[in-house]
Amino acid sequence: DAFGVHGVGGVLGGILTGFFANDFVSGNPSKKGAFYGKGEQVGTQLVGIIIIAGWSFFASFVILSIIKLVMGVRVNERSEADGLDISEHGESMLESGDFLKMQAGRGWGG
Figure 1 (cartoon, helix red, strand yellow):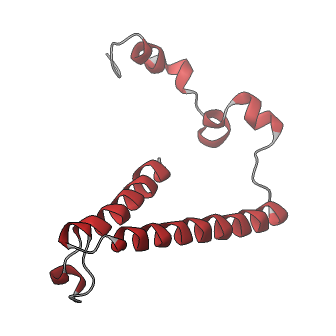
Figure 2: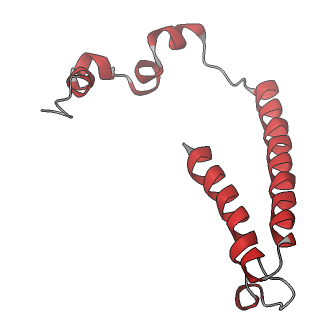
C-alpha cells in the first residue's frame, strides 16, 4: 500500500511538476514547466525521479541485507503455516466468521 500511495503519487507529482511549474512556485523565472514554455523541465523531473528510484532501491537493498544478516526477514515455517494473524495476534480472522460474512457481501459484523 505504501508504494501505491507514496510511490505512484510521488512519481505522478514529480512528472506533473514538470508541466505546471511556474516562476511563482520555483522562485526562479527560468524554472518554468512545459505549460509555461519550458518543456525541458519535464525531462529534468524524469531524470530526478529515476535517480531517486535508484537510490531508494539501493538503500532498501542495503538495509534489508543487513536485517537479513542480523535477524532474518522471514518468520519461521510454523508461524507461516499457521498464519501470521495467529502467531502475531493470537487470533484468526477466519474463525471469527466476519471474513466469511464479508466475502458473502454482508459486510463486517452483520
